[in-house]
Length: 326
Image (tube, rainbow, N blue to C red):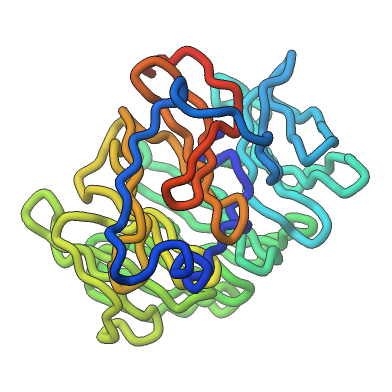
């Protein structure tokens, strides 16, 4: 279960709960994860995708819903429905975003768009995605209603633009050493920082950017989105991979991680205090199952599985299968 295949909105963490388990004076644990050495716990509790006879199947508790296309990713919750992006193995057919309604009905919201670029606002009201032209160099960003796909606005084309976050009124975009806010309905833009950013949370007023090219010694800064001079954390080694929805914790890994996923993932508070480190051959995804429980997609030396961890207490949440290298 990769990060893109799970319900991102359930990422939440409560610092006080973790503090009860790991007091400030206790050393943060480093946990080696090899699925063949772990016990089998309960199945994954949050909505996710599983392999079906004809492609990915949306699973929510006892409910299984077949999807169009063969490959899918859960985008997030919108009201009583879940939004899922789908496409075929060739990535060019059955490209759409659908709503999986509470009664199991599957309704198209968007078609003929790249579902891998789609993000959902924290309140589930607004979708944003990107379209590419000019050999991928020119990018147009779109925003639409998550209820019916009605387009609310578009921005571009521009060169090498990255979409970071969206809400009902604005999107945060980054390009060529500039991160800026785009007002969806008026089209106006405003520079936030003269740096390229990698992560933004409008909901929690957070922005992560690099001071310069990380391959040339650039450091990561985590700041307030609305006041970038207000710094939470600086690291010249790690970058921010994800922030919990309550805005109190984050996952980080080495800033130069590329290709396969990281071998180490660190759970931290926003000021950089390390709560735990998880280690394996490589991680292909990460999510939270509940406020104090992580789900990590572990690819070990012999086996791979989704592993559930509460600090240093970890167990398999899926049956381990033979590890393979992509």
